[in-house]
Length: 173
Image (cartoon, rainbow, N blue to C red):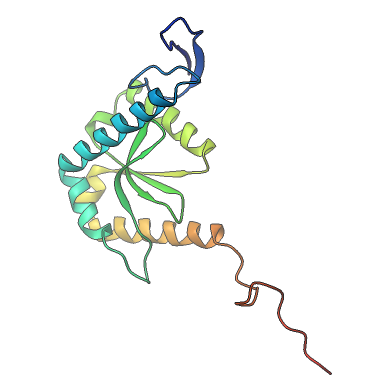
């Protein structure tokens, strides 16, 4: 969905391709405006972290933490002007927990637009119904971890090179 954003100050509006309305309107050459939007998005994400819903809290208690054997997740993570429920940077995987607010036609269209935009950024979105989190939390977590590990393996750089960074040493005959 294209819309026009006015920069104010007599500047020409610029076209913005984004699935949701901007928090502020930015002028194309306004670094201050871009920083202000980033601050607002990050502030909104921080506020959302404090008001997570039941299924999100349940899922976060299982996904949080760092370890060598599992990928790292972030909660209420901003990507552009979108805030995703959970994000795994190593797998470029966004997880969205969909409750009753995602059931209407207009809401589904908005979700699809967000998913398309994230896909263009190279991010895969995994949508999980809130009811599934309540019914089978361990199954949902296993599915998320499997998907993150599978994507992480595909995105990881090749490990065929030696630790010195060059080709393997030649063996003398």
